[in-house]
Image (cartoon, rainbow, N blue to C red; front, side, top):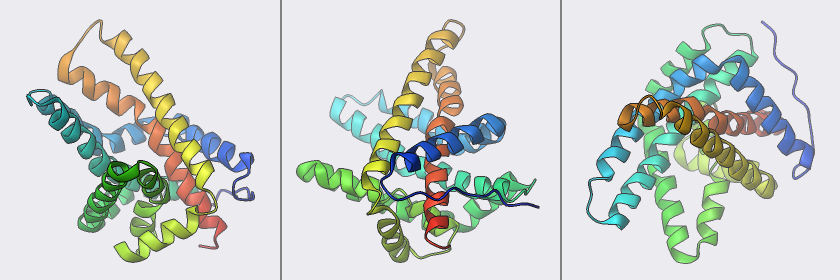
Length: 231
């Protein structure tokens, strides 16, 4: 088994951002079926929650239920992808099985961390918006630190902040770019597939086929920054 060499760049350099995007989307192309399988972890429950939220009379409560569920559940898929990508880069053919096993072993910790992160983001946004953005960005390595480095929630929070504090703008740019790309892809796919089907099945299909475009580069970002720090 061989380990893929990683390019070293200075934090905040444009090259670092381009490497995250390039390597992340290369992995999407190479391992797309497996990443779709991983996406099912988050996107199937999210589709059902989104459908149920539409029946809530209050628009505010409906939006809150939808967005909070996204914030809590989506990181679980990213955590699984981090393990799978790390194993693929080491040449492990059983990467997906190992990734799901890691998710099950760490599920309670990952879920608790995800809920705390979601609460922090919502409180920050509710206060002045900017603190919420800070929590959102500086927590992007939280899941990886737990599932791959076996840290506690407190240690993972400190680890994520340590890895990203010098890379804040690159990580913010990465997050915005991958969400925009996934959103555009979702719109195109929905317009095409929506001709044939609609409702919940359409929502699930669109979500699972486009979310890897977002979470794969974010997973690669953790792996590259962790490697650069000496782990």
